[in-house]
Length: 310
Ligand SMILES: [Zn+2]
Image (spheres, rainbow, N blue to C red):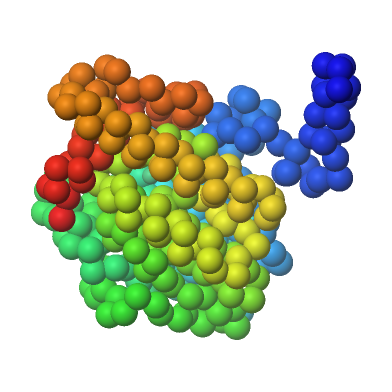
């Protein structure tokens, strides 16, 4: 095949019979994706009553929440990073439904998903893993006004709970530790949607500050084994169903590659600082947050290799 023919085949393959989301560049950078920042925040319709909510936060990528609208109330999985951002999300949700928010699932306990939770109604029901409840308790003790950390009153007592969101069945799942250690996923079995919170960072360099690197890979395998059509990330863009599965596999590949590269450097006997300097991240160097998260990943994988990660 000549170069021209290969090029032509690539163009036809790329344009192909795909939805507009399938055809979008696979990246977490809004500019490369071709989406103007003025389009955010926005609700991405997944079904008649299920939405993803994409809002831009510093340093310029999306934080995603899940919104399920039942006949008698609304469930939100993951909030936004400030009271104002979560308030804006509630306003946006109420443009599509006047019903009250009645349920909230703590997918990630990190501040960029929970710091706005004091804007939520006071009488809602929280679902949180024991590990994330513990983390939020610690954060609440360390919080200085005006920062308020909302701590759910009770934690999950098993790895799976069912919530009836006014006729829509929601499964809340703990499939293993990953990005925070308290990671919770939200499955809609009938709609075959899985909101993965920060277990799935779409085209974002694996962020490992509080992660369990090897277990994270297994947790993604557990998610891939479920009968799911559409995987929704906690950061990065919401993809069309087919692309969402492909991208989850790509993200798992990034995790595996990062662990492999750090293991190589560890085996050479390098110090953490030298490993940070010498690491070769290949294509993942171009991913969002690579500049700030690469060193964090080296430290965390070293911790795991040295048996210091409990
Ligand atoms: Zn986050």
